[in-house]
Amino acid sequence: MEHQIKLIDKDTVIPKLTPLGWDLVVKGKPFYVAHIPGYVHCIRGWGEPIDLWAWPRDEEPAYENLVEYDLDSPVAWGMNYHESRYIKCKWDDTMLRGGAGTTITRNDEEFYYVPGGRGYSIPKALMLICKIQEHPLDFCTIDFDKKMVGRKIWYNSQPAVIDRYVKGQCCVIIRPDGAERFETPAEFVKEPLWDEEDARRLKIDCLADERVWWFRD
Image (cartoon, rainbow, N blue to C red):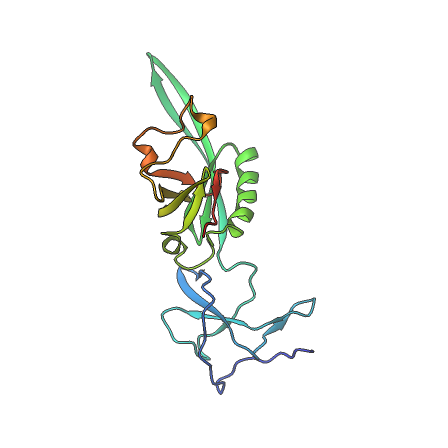
C-alpha cells in the first residue's frame, strides 16, 4: 500500500488521542506523543509512514499546538565529563589528588555517574546509554520511577520487590518478597555481601548488578 503525505490543517477534526507514554521534554516543557491515523507527515527512506504527532501535556491537542514527531528517541540522553582537583591532608602530609567521571543525563537531569578518566568513562557512558534505552524498567517512559514500585523481580534467585527508585543514581531499593531477609548466596557464605540489617533492604545498581532478573510473575 502506497502512503501519501497528509498534514493537519485548521479544518482538521482531531480525534481522541491516546498518548504513547514517552517522556518527551522540549526546553523544559513536557509533551505527549501519539499516532494520528491517516495523517502522515513524512515517509522514511524504506517506505515507513510516520503519523506521530506531539503536543504540550498541559494542553488539548489542536492544530495550533500539534507538531510533527520524527525522533529516534523521545528522551534526550546526554553526557557531561568532569575533572576535579583537591588537596588531601593525611599523617602530616599534604598532597594533591584528582577525580574524574562522566555523568549521564536524562532530559537534562542527572541520571547516572560513571567514575574514571575520559578514556574509560566516556566510552562506558556511551555503551550504557544504549543499555538504558533497552532496559526492562522503561527509562524512556513518563513516571518510570513510580511505575516500577512494587515490581516483582528475582535477586540472587530469591523473590524480591522494588520499594523505590533512587533518583540521580539509577539505583533501586529492594526488599525480600515472602521472607524477612535476603539469604547470602552460597558462594559468599565465608565473605557475606551484606550484614543482617542490610539484608532486609538492599540498594542495587540497575545497570551494573548482574544478579538481578527483572521479570517475575
